[in-house]
Image (tube, rainbow, N blue to C red; front, side, top):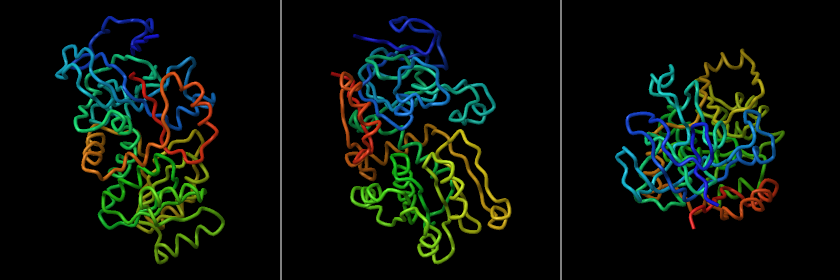
Length: 337
């Protein structure tokens, strides 16, 4: 069954183009590949706190242009989709920070996503994907999250960086931290994930989280702490503990977001003169940086994609992957026949 998902209220089989947004209007796309992320598993399990059901999921998207409309894109062109639909007029958008738009709508979360055959999207959210396979293009969005966090940190080349959490977002952050010239250490509670980080990506400096983590951080940094710490766990207690891993004069970047309140010791925070940074989504510059790094071989996409399925296989495979995490980094759905 074919489905066309539109951002405007209406039927799923709606085919006429909705009112234009931005100078280039709307583009009709044939969805090619969709990545599955932690948000999708939470939605599937009914655990997402900011979502109304029913919802078509899917926000890590590659596609080809079916009808370019008034845009500058060509029919048949491969594109990477930026799934963060911004209003263009709020205080964040006026500062050229649409990633934290006050009225943001993320595909697959606030509005229907791309686990379907066709979709209509604003041309401004589509980036040419020349030189990438369509499967690789579907990994760009989740990698851009880490690339954005690294850029937000402003940590200089040679900085000692700790990435807490060796899931897909953490691994992407570690890869782009290394690309930025940082000396990268990865921390996780799972020996299996740390082994995968080392074997697949050469991220050999690691710390197994546990009771002796403070001593391990001290040994790894000659007692100084890390110049920059990225927490990508989505776990409140881990985010709170990360403050203690930061060197005096260093920075903590919260890559993941949780619904909980985060508490920390003000004296510990102040004596370090720490910088605390929130990192949300990504912007076009991050997407383009990721695509360039994939093209020149600095990001091993083949090592990131561990599981594959088709649109027909999603009901069974998604249910299985929601609980069977061993060996799983990134699962990709091939939508196009």
